[in-house]
Image (cartoon, rainbow, N blue to C red; front, side):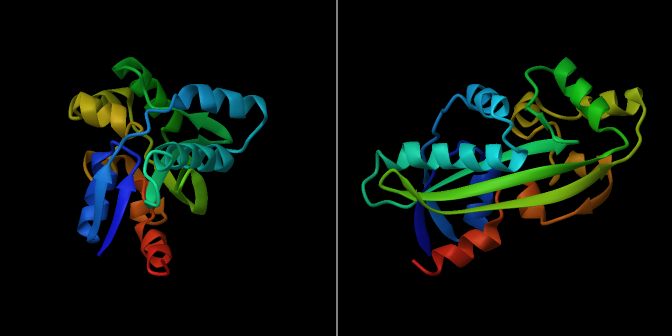
Length: 193
């Protein structure tokens, strides 16, 4: 069993670690993700670079507080035609996002970073392709009515492990990547420590 610090408040990420017998303490980084995204977008950074940088910032920030501890930071972004889709701020925004994804293929990019003493020592980025069914506005609203506020604001509009699966006609990629934590690569790296 490994012991790490998770620089995230994500219940799903914590659950994945627990299910894989990776003991962790949770210390959210509370970085201002939106301002980092805006800054990186001005520099024409790709969604993959944005996801990686956010994961690294989170891990590095927390690892500065815990000498010689292993800290895991993670971030996921949605990329549709090279446009970054951020988490919704309200239900109207969530509906707009679902309309944008409706009937199209988008990519969910998840990055993880392991830091120690304020510096990244390992990182990995994975991508999954998700094709959403062509749904009516009524069906999209019905889906949103089944989702709690907590789930809606935490999981980029859809929970693939729950109701969200019904939105898609095709999913290509690792389910753990879609849930925000490519656990097999993390376990592989931790086994070398």
